[in-house]
Amino acid sequence: MMYTFQPMTQKEAEHIAGQWHYEGKYSFYDISADEEDHEEFLDPKQREGKSFSVYKNGSLIGFFSFTKPEPNVVDIGLGLRPDLTGNGEGQYFLEQGIDYVKDSFSPQKLTLSVATFNERAIKVYERVGFKKVQAFMQDTNGSTFEFVKMEYEVGE
Image (cartoon, rainbow, N blue to C red; front, side, top):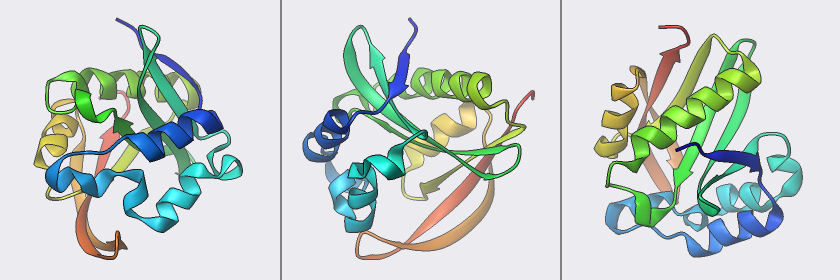
């Protein structure tokens, strides 16, 4: 079943930021958990050309953001609707996002960063071919957290 990607509208951004709340430790990923991230997510100029809503069967199920930190590299951010997490949807969602970014940007490498406590996401990323390359500390959500940067070589 194919997903549909479209540029994120203001209404979609507001819905995601205001209505999507994750359970337990995963509430870390609520858009509203970090004021700076929240403001950026809701700013149409900052989303323009890089944030996409993802639909399946007419229903908003997630989002991807794509930035190019250097030539031939695309950094991805993603969010799956909270009620769809932890039940096997994530791998297919990620694979569809990878296909979309490969078709749209033709990168040689994809990168992403994930909090190290999010072991279930890391397992999904590794299953599709991402490899851990660097751990780092980042200030976010009112504290400092450990993250891991992961890379995916296109064509492997």
